[in-house]
Amino acid sequence: MPRLPIPGSDEGTWGDLLNEFLEVEHSADGTLKLTDTIASKYVKPTSGIPKSDLAAPVQSSLDAADAAAAQSALDDHVNDTSAAHAASAVSFAPAGAISATTVQAAIEEVATEAGSSITLSDASPSALAAAAAAGVSNEISRHDHVHPDTGLATETALDSHTTATTGVHGIADTSVLETSTGAQTKVDAHAGDTTAVHGIADTSVLETTTGAQAKVDVHTGDGVDAHAATAISYDNTASSLTATDSQAAIDELVTTLSSTQLADLADVVETAASDGQVLTFDTTNGWQPETPAVGITSHSGLSDLGADDHLQYQIADIAQFAREGTLSVASGRGRYRFPYTATILGVSAAVDTAPVGSGITIDVNKNGTTIYTTQGNRPSVSDGTNDAAETTPDVTAVASGDHLTVDIDTVGSSTPGADLTVFVRYARA
Image 1 (cartoon, rainbow, N blue to C red):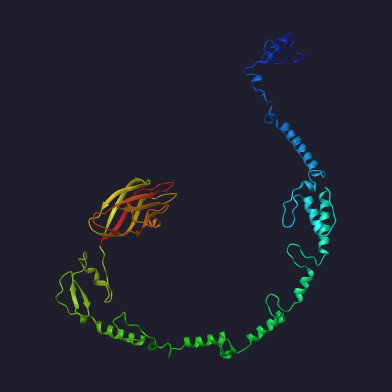
Image 2 (tube, rainbow, N blue to C red; image 1 turned 30 degrees about the vertical axis):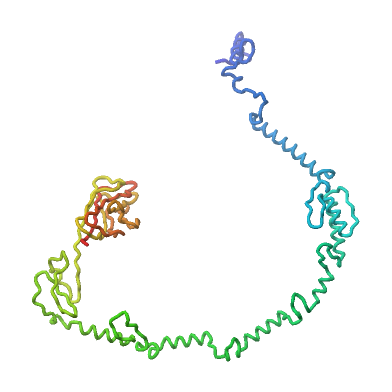
């Protein structure tokens, strides 16, 4: 590898070492090599070296120099009172009675209008301010001055307006206007007046809050007159009762019910009932045997019921959907066709392997559309459990020929769960 000669060493070979070192970047004629050498690392632009190609410290120095030059120019402009900041060089938009178009001319016009003989030449801002103050002072000293354009009177007219007691703002005589103290006195007198105020002949008989509450309490506790059942009307238009007050209506109901109740089971006289029938009672026909609802074939379960108990049996079928193995999110699984019109009573589910990390959510579709309009009610096997409690869907009516399918909407995030069975419980409509 080429290197420089080492002083005190390389005796007899230092010239060869130096030539070998120089030949890395130089040709035999002394020019720089152009391929993969120092000369190929940077090509100077024809327009000169841009600042961005310079080292960061150099760029900072140039920026500081630019800022110093800009500040110097700004200082020169701020301190210039002979040209750029002269009042005659600052434009003014004419307004009102002033027609001047420069600040210089406007100040002189205002000074003349105020009665001052001030004549200003180009001056500094402080001189202009002093001149304006002098003009304003002259104007204030003229109390009876009337503006030539508007005719507005100053102090003299204002004093006259203040002391006038007639014809001011349309009031014939302002001396009758009430002071705040006098107005309060009259309000107090009105508040304490107990006769002929607001059309009440004698306001002393008006009830206080405490007195009114006492009378309400007396009325509420009255159970003899105002609150007696005979004093409370009853509207019989929507019933078969003839009573027109609450007491009579209650008495009529008691009489009607007493006439239809059974004294004891000895009142039941019926020998024509056949096996499998039940007895029913109505006021027209008395006790009658009837065939019970479809599905009830035995009444042995009625033996332990009391005399006043009533029992209704509902025969239900169950449609089962099974999914073996490890679960995954899926839709439209299984298919169950209803053989008759029915009502869905509820949906539950169970798994052999519980989900871990999150739960399993089940949805059931009728003809492809979910029966859980409220998605929050879908059956769910919670994290670490094996069963989903039965929930009632929003859509429960199914017709003969309708079909159900099952969706697995979510599974456990760590352990999905396995071997799922979904139970749809329904009954013939």
